[in-house]
Image (cartoon, rainbow, N blue to C red):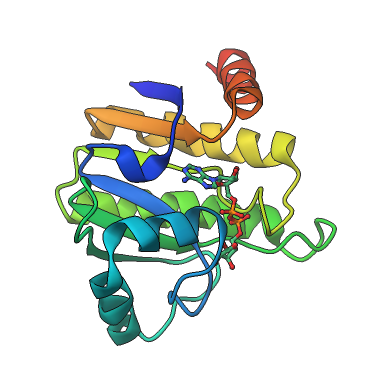
Length: 165
Ligand code: APR
């Protein structure tokens, strides 16, 4: 079951929220900054022990002060025009996040729109990649949530889901 909502992902009471992180895993702006602020300083201390994360990969941490039990940190590709393996790397972010969630018995998972903010990935193709991956994994979870940060983004997700379902 894929749910498309507009909310601040740090407020969601789910097993895992996915963070659109950078390779240091030590926080930043956007959703990364929001998650680190809401989780508290122990998140950064924990992430320091993970010693970074390559683009397209995912790492899991406790949620600390978040309502979510876990944070799955995934590093999206920076958009460089589309011929630097960006589609494959973005797809890998979703797939690796789902796989690490399954390995940790996560039953409900919420994603932000990875790479579509600071990293500049065009929203339409990014949404198509996200929805394709979510459809492939939805039956293995109780809840798969796309947590958009604007109604415009949520509308695009709904449009793409309707087209792909
Ligand atoms: N809840 C849900 N979604 C959010 C939130 C939030 N609190 N804050 C921002 N977003 C949305 C943005 O509107 C965008 O749609 O998350 C999406 C991803 O945008 P970014 O957070 O800018 O992430 P990204 O484009 O992947 O860039 C990652 O930005 O913050 C830094 O440290 C981070 O270097 C990394 C880079």
